[in-house]
Picture (spheres, rainbow, N blue to C red):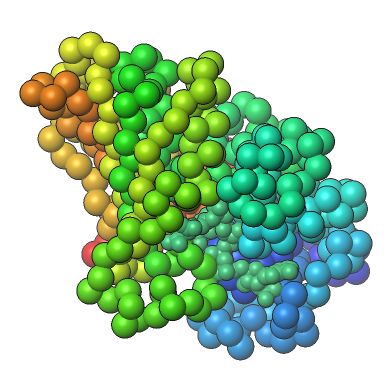
Length: 356
Ligand SMILES: NC(=O)C1=CN([C@@H]2O[C@H](COP(=O)(O)OP(=O)(O)OC[C@H]3O[C@@H](n4cnc5c(N)ncnc54)[C@H](OP(=O)(O)O)[C@@H]3O)[C@@H](O)[C@H]2O)C=CC1
Ligand SMILES: CC(=O)N[C@@H](CCC(=O)OP(=O)(O)O)C(=O)O
């Protein structure tokens, strides 16, 4: 722990704004296992001075210092890098002052992912951050843009659904093996994807033994997926994207369908993906005929992907699963921090999924 200014053990000093949310608490869990990081400030806008263990008894004796308030200048005296695990709209207002205070920032919200402010305002219904900051934010999908993350000071962490979906689509789109104009994405998420704040949707009686579609054709992750696919193909891409809430705590399964542009076997598809993700520690490609389930990545930073070619329809089905709180949020954010700092990408993240 840094006390009054001096860094102890030469570790990176990290602060977490939104530490009392699901993403923040998951960052704390993973940092217990990170050799180069010291959490020097856990921050709350509503409970400063209190113990985080009051709201999260599982953190008793894990974090001993009380929650700090949201004061960028003060955060900069305690930390070198700050994670903003804050709601969209909040990050847009807070991040500029954190950067001005000299902090490195990794933002987990959707506020800095879209490069065009008017697109952001259309989908998120909040005023967009400045064009300069949207330009400066690096989209931290390590498997695709890892080289751009290295050495940078401001990373926008990808959304949970876009992470599962884009990791499942990009190799086939980039190879030209599927027609981007035919992509349909059918995605499901556990309830923790909506954060800790209570709502009618996450009420036990509404969610248990229920399966419901939501935000049809209006989901804020549609433009994020389209932006990245458009960058890869070099021309605009539109997708059909439907999200569902399923009665489980964690996990996302994204099932994607697209027309193949030529004849390819399951084996060839698997080999294409294995080559694309060669040396990437967190993407695991299943053998033909084996499809991943959400429990196989639970609590881990893995994204597991499986395929099925249908010669009858000429379509490829891709199944991609992640833990929304880990690869979809905090784990991926730590992966980005490792790359920013020039460390091994998997430092502190080698967690085997919890099973069963
Ligand atoms: N849950 C998930 O699976 C994923 C979430 N995300 C994104 O990550 C971010 C965090 O998500 P998640 O942890 O689930 O959300 P939660 O709702 O669980 O937590 C958000 C936290 O933000 C803090 N907060 C609220 N208002 C302010 C404010 N004005 N200033 C500072 N802090 C504030 C709150 O804590 P306090 O009141 O103590 O300040 C709250 O605990 C969101 O933008 C979300 O969209 C991204 C990918 C996946
Ligand atoms: C289950 C559930 O409700 N999930 C949320 C994910 C929100 C999220 O992570 O939002 P940003 O990535 O845009 O910050 C949703 O579908 O809106």
